Length: 516
Image (cartoon, rainbow, N blue to C red; front, side, top):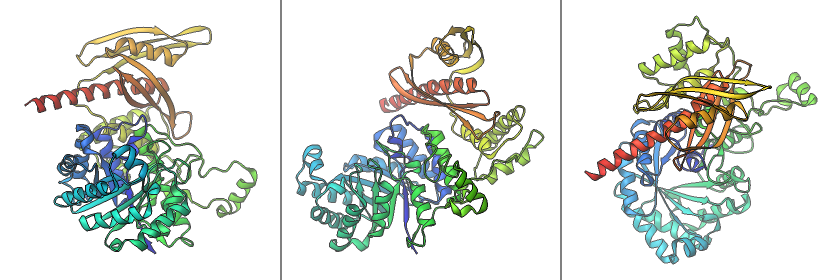
């Protein structure tokens, strides 16, 4: 069995999904989970794009020790220098540098001749080689490039110092046969190709990203790039969990395996969905809610007699276990700490204290506390930025009935420490609640999207709300969880406004630093 490396770009390409905006702490928690999952390399971000992304890449590079950390850069010296400053604390820093090679991109976007593109690519790879031990060079829009030109530039960037060559299907245009043939051509026509890792990176615009990735591996690629849950720009990227499970289940057909710990697949998927706000559809392969559900009577009968009649993937393979009671209201702090350790999550003593307090509060209302509940509590605490004064909910009350007008009363503590309160009506309870919050917050807000989900099942399940707000002209995501749907909705709204405040505080700090 040949081992295929897994390059995860959830934190870079995945974060480019419309409406996704992860902060530093959220990125760090996803990075830790990706390390537990066992990815070979993770792309932490694009440091030159913003100070926030630079700081996020830096903290991930300084923290992650068992996975190679990568950052993206354009073929510009300043981008490369900034990426080095962010990555130099990593155990194995890797630079991902890209330049388009298709005629349409070279002509209309780069406005460069093929010779100029080769010169730029080789010069920047050679420059990066002075700093980085590992350099991945990507031929942007490779699948629509001339193969002979592609072979020519690949050979030259390898001579310049590239250690990984990535041939992406940037716009999700190609088919498995075409994509596989391109990799075969490069294997056969680039004399020094054996000196590098050959990588594939597929987008899902035509729904063929996973199939194209596997076709590339069948024709010589030794690394697959993708994202958790297949998130990303437009229709997203190849879903890494689908590829890894497909290679595992069909090991009788494919002679490839990955280093992923498949039991961490579902938890990784849940964390990415929770923190990005991009909840997966119920019928999503491998990790969807219905992936192991059987509605048809014939299917149910077959599964009851023998699971393999219709179930080719066992839930346990990807870490899906029955949500049984593991702790109750009489459980102590020591038992709680052991459960957190069992989940593989490291918490500071301060956060253990906060998480345990939240857990005890939950047990007052919920009889069966599950792993999913604990995971939600921990994630909220680990990704909460408490160093900035923010809006805090003091009290809320909603009056709602079929024969009266929904009315919400809310009391908040402002970032300045002042307590404010008011009441508003609306056509529904959520509208009344959000009108009241809008009246109390100083920022100008507009609701763009609102979602509500349950954590697990049962009438006493935790509610998880996600909103997208326009705050003073900027799009910001927020999320909140509580046993009460309305409280979760309040927390999500305030979380979005507070995230905006934190962003502004950080921006002001950066301006002060630059001015000095």
